[in-house]
Image (cartoon, rainbow, N blue to C red; front, side, top):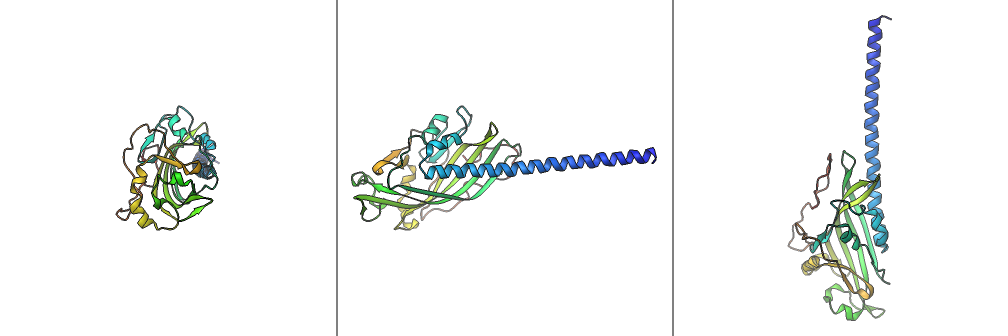
Length: 261
C-alpha cells in the first residue's frame, strides 16, 4: 500500500469515526429529551393523583425549591402568586371532608423540552367531577343553582362536571424536573342535573372570586391574598363566548420563553 493510499484510508476512517460520534451524540440527545418528556409527564400525573386524594402536602416537593427566581401560580382572575411562600400556601392545610370527591383526569398533553435541556413547557386538558356535602346553613350563602335537588344525610349536595386546561413550565433543578410556573384555566362546569350551556350563563362571576375549595361542612375557603393582579383574564364558557387557542401548545424551542402569562 502506497503512502498516498494509506493516508486516504486513514482520512476516510477518521471521517467515519467523526460521523459515528455525531450520530451517537444526536442519539443521546434524542434519548435524553424522550426521557425528559416521560419524567415531566409522570411529574404532573403524580401531582394530579395526589391532588385527587387531598394529599397536597406531598405536592410541595414537586415544586422548585424555595428561593427559585420566577416561581408563579395562577388559578382564577383574582390574582397570581409569585413567591414561594404564597404558591405553597395553596397546598397547605387542605382538608379531606367526608363525602367529598375530586376526580380530575388529565389528557392530551403537548410537552416540549427546550434544546438546552434546562426547561420544558407542557399543556393538558382535564375532564373531571367535583362533589361534596354542605351543611344547609352554609348552603344559604350560595346560589341554589349550585346544588342538586334534595339532601343526603341531612346535607345539601353539590355534584359538578368540570373541564379545565393547564399550562405549566418546568425547570430542571439538581438533576430533577420540578414545577416552576403553573396556570389553570377553568373551561366550563355544570351541575350533574344541568347542561353546561345554560349553567355557563349563570356562572360567569364565579371565576372572578378567590374561592379555593369547599372544606368541612362545605364551608368555602378562600385563596390567600394574591401578590399581583393577573396580566389578562380568562373566562369559562358561556353561550356568548367564542373559543380561542389559549394556551397555545408549546413548539420546539432552544431556551425558555415566558408564553403562559
